[in-house]
Length: 427
Ligand SMILES: Nc1ncnc2c1ncn2[C@@H]1O[C@H](COP(=O)(O)OP(=O)(O)OP(=O)(O)O)[C@@H](O)[C@H]1O
Ligand SMILES: CC(C)(CO)[C@@H](O)C(=O)NCCC(=O)O
Image (cartoon, rainbow, N blue to C red; front, side, top):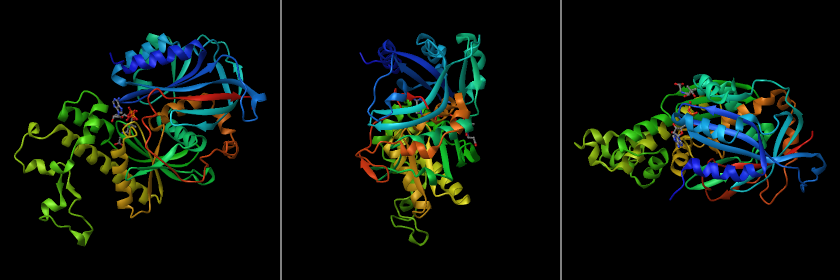
C-alpha cells in the first residue's frame, strides 16, 4: 500500500531521530500550508574535509516539512510525537550564525555554519518562532495542545530574511527556467540588491528588497495559489493540488481560451504585436461554445487556469519591476512547486512584456522562505554580524563553479521532506 505523506515524513524522522536530537523548530503558518524548518544534531561531531574541523562543534541536518493548514492538528501531532518543540535534550542558542553551503547535490545540500553554543537560560516557557497569519490565528491552539508559546515574527520580515539567506548562502539556489531549460544563476552578493521578490502563496506579495531587513511591500494580488487551487478544485473535482497540477500537464488551453486567431480569423494582429496563437481572453471560448462544464476535459480546464493565474502574476510582477526599475525578479512560494509549465509561463510572460529586459528567476527552496526567516530570527543579532563576503569566500570550489551558468535537467521537487546536511563550527 502506498504510504501517505505523513507516514513518509514519520518514517524518515524515526530513522533520523535514532541518531539525532532536535533543536530550533520554526513555523510558517500560511493560509494554505504550514511549513516547518528544524535542525537536528547528529550525536557527536565528526571530522570534515574543508580544513575547519578543529572548529566543528556540531553536525546535523536542517529539515523541511509541510502540512495543509486545514490539517493543523496533524501538524501539532507530528511536532508532539517527535518532540520537536522541546529542542532535543538541550535547547541551544545559536550565536553568530553563519550558514554556508559546502556542497550540494540534487537531493541534499551540505551546509556548515559558524555558531557559538550556549544552553538557553532555564525557563518554564518553551518559545517557538512562528510567522504567517496562523502564528496569530493558532497561537492559543498551539499553546493549549503543545504547551508552547508562539513567538510571532513578521511575515514580510521572514520572507525577506529567508530569501536573502538562500540567495547569499545556498549554492545553486536560484535558477531561470525557459523552454524546458533550467539554468542556475550565479548570485553576486555584492550586486544582489535591489530585486523584486514575488511570493506566490495563497495570495501574492510583491516586495522590493534593498538589503538585509530593508524592503517595502510594493504590491500584491489576491489572485494567487489559493485561487488556482480553489477554482481548480471546484472546476475539475481534483482531490489534491498535485493532482490538479499533474492534470494540467496533459491539457490544451486552446480548447477554452479565446485566442487572437479565434477573433481575427486565424491571422496575427501584427500591428500591435499579437500572434494569432496569443491568448486574447482566458476562458473566453466558454462563452460562445454553448457547452457546459462537463463538456470540457478537466485537463484542459486545469491548463487554462494555470496559464491564467501564472500569466497574470507574471504581468503584475513585471509592471511593478518596471515602475521601480528592477531588473531581477525572484518568484517564490509553494504555488510554483518546481512545476515546469508554471515557471515557463511566468518566464515567457516576463520576457515578453519586458522585451527581454527583465529576468524571472526561481528558488529551489521556494516554499520555505518564511519558515527559514523565522528559524534565523532565533538570533537576529548574530546574523547581523555576519560578513556576507566571508560566506562566499568559504564556498568550496567544486566542478560546478559559481560564476558560470550551469545547465541541468529539471530536478524533482526538492521541497518535500528535503533536508540539508549541516556542520556547526565555533566562530
Ligand atoms: N499540497 C498542497 N496543498 C495545498 N496547496 C498547495 C500544495 N502544494 C502547493 N500548493 C499551492 O501553494 C499555495 C500555498 O503556498 P504557500 O505555502 O507559499 O502560501 P501560504 O503561506 O499558505 O499562503 P499565504 O502566504 O498567502 O498565507 C496554495 O495556495 C497552492 O496553490
Ligand atoms: C495576506 C497575505 C500577506 C497573507 O500571507 C497574502 O495572502 C497576500 O499577500 N495576499 C494578497 C493580498 C493583496 O495584496 O491583495
